[in-house]
Length: 264
Image (cartoon, rainbow, N blue to C red):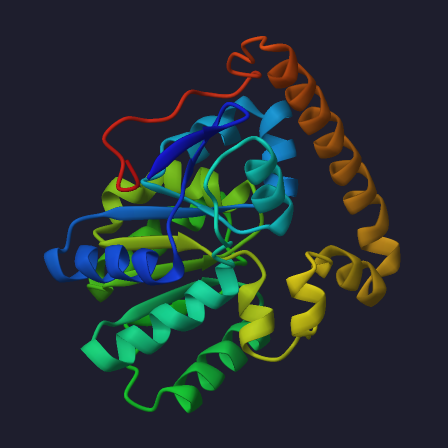
């Protein structure tokens, strides 16, 4: 089910439904692009129209952050749970091992990437990679990267690069890649390989993973989360007031939901 969340399209899908859509795309070799939406990305979209257009053009806009879950519920949308990007990646790799799909990892440093690949193979011994490459390539090398991915005949591509770089890469090259299922995974390779510890389950349940990240990297993370969380709270409060007063919220500066999407 595709819905509009504060002017941004979201797909209200469970983990099982998302995995089923991805596997169906790989079986048919029909391209489906997934993007994970959290509070930080939503706020950045307000100030970056190119990023907003990139997200809106995706086939699945998954709900990654608990902040988005709670806000959507407050606005009356029937969101039951989030589909965290790292959890979806883990589920899809398990499905690849079972069904013989071959993934391609793109992104992170060479050391982190190698560790993520190694740990994935240890968890699923039947998993066969189509290929992998770190994310430290120049704009001039992009064409070579695209050719390598296409030549690999990968069934799915997981991109571990930061926003908005991965969105811009996909907007420019997704039609050339020849990969059925494409997903940006941000820093999930770090977690997959054990380089970065994920928040304990209880912390995740209460939507405080951002606080755990600040605990791990206070100098780099505190201002980022303080800024985006405050802006998001302001946007949500304004929308709730307008909803209570019966005032149409309009597009809020973002793009309308894309029609004909996987979620719709």
